[in-house]
Image (cartoon, rainbow, N blue to C red):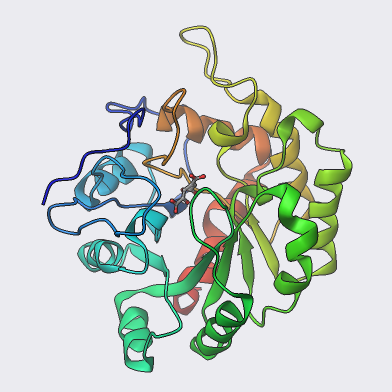
Length: 304
Ligand code: 0GY
């Protein structure tokens, strides 16, 4: 089966630069995806976009090029609740990838156990309206209750304007909860705006809530560097991510978000994204927590 990718969709950045920042040994790229390839792992009929193919071989090549040791592969909405591409990538990683799945209410206990054996350690609940249809909260809560005994966590993806309405639901989740991309703040408002204060308050009041300080390329208003050779990109996102890293150093994760779904204006150089890290985690200790200790605790606890 062949798939026509969504018009305007940018392919991932071929030939990323080598980062200047040297990642600590054992660093984990804790948010990335695999897409297809569609001929082998067809995209879901209910998807809101059709991506370019971006398979496990390319992901692992990027991992090695950037200097990461491991990946956490997050199920993307274009694959719906068909986790085969993600599971196949985990299986092929030789223990160096773990996964976050999407499941529906109908999932059986046997399927959950098979996902666990394949390396899945969490489920993702997506509330971004352009990406998914609405799922009733009682269905999600039922899923959360079923995955909790496996020691899994819930990854939540939402936009900052929706946090007030979702707050009580998130607060009731019985697991560790990991927020994608700092809850997608409106960076134009500033890191001390009421909107971002609410997110900080949410993390402060709920000790089980973690955040990925990822996706500056998605959140930035100023965008990538204008000048060739300038590696200090996406500066307007730094105060947001740095604040979260310094306030909650033991509850933060970082990921490339490769192959960067739905970016239409520019496609980031993943080497540049890695060079963003020392601007948001400014000491060796913070970098080791962000990139090694925290993701290992969550995804490979048996090795900690
Ligand atoms: C991300 C962001 C996006 C897409 C998805 O599952 C997805 O389709 O997560 C987005 O469009 O903002 O984290 O990959």
